[in-house]
Image (cartoon, rainbow, N blue to C red; front, side, top):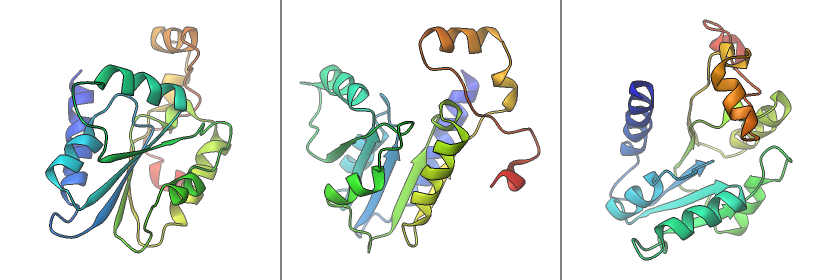
Length: 172
């Protein structure tokens, strides 16, 4: 639980660096049930918030928040990262202004993707001129046959990727 709190604070601090008095983009890849884009859009009306995630996940989230908050300030983009669907083209079709400063967050996603899908995803981020990226990776020990790995595999979402401790620079 402490790791999740620290990770959330790390990502929130990065989002807090977005300009508050001028337009910008916040692109949240694999938002899941996180409400960061909603909080950001409410606090910074000039920030265009985009959530890119699997359509099934987005439908679940929208059902859960229906009647509790407005979804008008967030633009939803449904894609399957593992199937190689082009999330960047989908973002552009939803109005992404690439002339604006853009922050792309990738929180908790990479461990569920193959090496090839991660490479494709990061190459697309690199296409966004001047974009900043904030992401996390997991220790490759998660790939071992641990209780956590068995649990997420049973849910149909096994960990596929991890980085050997101390090799993040080489991996990037």
